Structure formats: structure tokens, C-alpha cells
Length: 339
Image 1 (cartoon, rainbow, N blue to C red):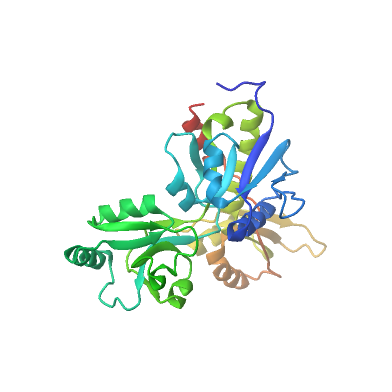
Image 2: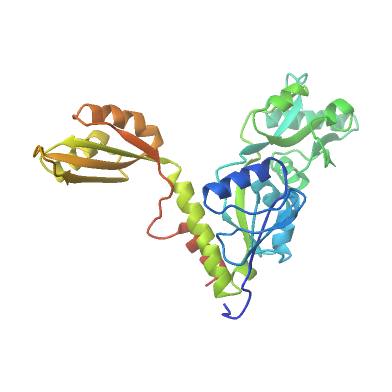
């Protein structure tokens, strides 16, 4: 039940440093939700474009617990951190699972010298060989919860997990472990440390995500309205990021003819939005302004086509926001809140 007199402040917890901090700072600026922070040593800030907002800066690994413990309504962290550390009590939920940055994959990696170990099935055989010699295969990781489930689901039962807080890649060469499971972006760090990722799907594809505390979000009309503003803005930005606008002018008989011609060019791929409006000029030419919203991948093809129908200069620009008829992430959140 929402109370009109309850919490009138929105608290958001963000990563305090590192790659995820930089990505989050850039993302929020592009969403017109930049935060204010006096210095990198200050752990409290604000988002001026959100009324009565407080920003707490925490280690990325502590964001989930801060949300679960009721210390903030919203937070941004890696999906890997959420999946590994969420307690499962139902209070911490994912609101947007992909914010478009921080992409990486959680994968097993073995020493390059293990030439016959290419897949997870090969690793299962290695585990059996270790058992035959009275040893357990040692695996260094920061994600023991996910890794344990993954290994068991792939028929690997004879292993021990070495939980390492620091750099995982050095564990095999230092003798702490036989192999590792860690996040990989390009694989360059693995290669530099004499390791190779196994073939096959990753344990988890991770990226930055927006999470929230169900109870706190539903605590007041004010908090709910501010969370809606955040979701609306982020969703509209992420949706628009795949599109460009094209503006040009062309000759034609009617708006209907021009729009029909453009749609015929695309075939089954419908234009997201298209507008043709007549332009009146002193030469009494039958000209129309065209405005098209199109996917980035189709931009060059459309420009080439427009050149064939006698257009003037073609202007393109990225689309900042596209708001749908409803905010899908907000509606999904309401269903989880039972509101």
C-alpha cells in the first residue's frame, strides 16, 4: 500500500570507482540525469534533475546488499554482481537488465598448455583424472555461487573453489589454482597470463543493470513518481540509441505517394516513423520535406535510395529519446510490486 506521507527522498546507490563508475557517469549524463559529486573521495552526491535525490557511492560489489538492506531505492551494478550476491528474499529486483555498457562474459579459462581441454565436457574428464590421482581440481573465481551451480549442472562434481578477491588470472601460474572462472571482455588479459577460454556459451553474459528495492519503491507516491521518471528516461534513451533521423526535401505529387515510395523501398521492414509535408516556395515547385526515423544499420542504404529520387541535401542526426505508448520497464515493475 502506497502512503502519500511516507518517504519523500529518492536514494540511488552507484559504483564509486573503476570502469563501471566511468560507464555509469557517462550513461547518466547522456540520459540527462548527471550526478553531482564534490570529489572522488566524497561518497554522497545528488542528481539535480531528480527532486530530493541522494546518491551514495559504494563499491560495485556492495551495491546489491545496500539495496537489499533498504539503504536505497535504486542502484546500478553489474548483472554478474546481482546474480552472484542477491539473497533471494525478493526485495531486490532487476528493473532494466541491460543499460548498454559494461558488457562482459563469465567464462572458464584453462592454461594454454592444456591443449586437449577445449570444451566443458573435456574439463569434466580432467576433473575425473584429478580424482583418480586423489586430488581435486582447484578453480579460482570471484563467483563461487554461480560457478558451483554451473559445474554441477555440467556433470563436474570433484572440484574445490578458491575464492580470490584480487586478480584471478595469476592464480594458475602462482600455484593457487589449476584454472579460473572470471569475467572476460576481449580475452587479451587471459592471453597475457597464459590462459585460454573454453569454447561454448558463457556462464553469464553480463552488463550494467538498474536494480531496485520493491518495498521502498512502493513506499510513497513521491518515490514511485521519481522511479517512473528514471525508468521512462532510461528506456526512451536506450530505445532511441538504435535509430537515426533523416531530414531531406524532394519532389512529388503528394505526401501519400512519397511515404508509399519509401515503404516500398524497405519492403517488409517498416519505417519506424515517416513524415512528408508540403513546402510552399516562390517558384511554385511541388516539393516536400521528408523526416524519417530509421535504424542505424539501414541508414546508408536509405541515404543511397533518397539520392535516386531527386532529394536535396540529406541531414542525419542521432535520435535522443523515443518514448513508447507505455513504459515497458515501469509496467513490469508495477507487476512485481503488485500495485
